[in-house]
Image (cartoon, rainbow, N blue to C red; front, side):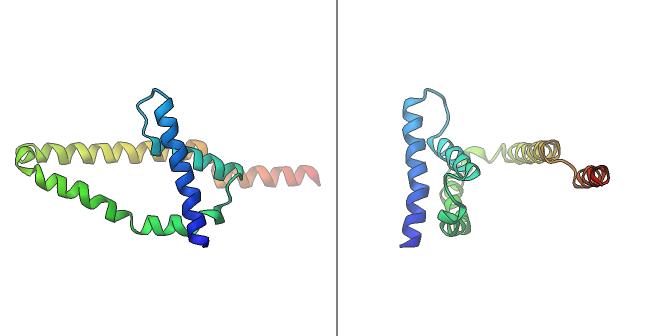
Length: 129
């Protein structure tokens, strides 16, 4: 019953996201709306992590299964992309590297340096004494 409840909570946010996609005239998938809403609900404490954790771990574990259909589709169109596949691989690698660098820079900008935080805390402790 616990897993059914957890799956239901996740599906509720997926459903709300799909409804939002229908009513909001932006080219954003309903699943993205649902993920953003679930993230906000988790951060604000509206939804507790324990309400979705086990099913989320299970879904994460079988995620590779969701890539089978796209892989089969690529095999199906291989004749059409055989001439340009090296360019596609280069494009994918460049996009991957740009994503990694952007994510790293963003994380460094948003997460204060631990050493810097420790120095500030020590300074406050000395002032308090």
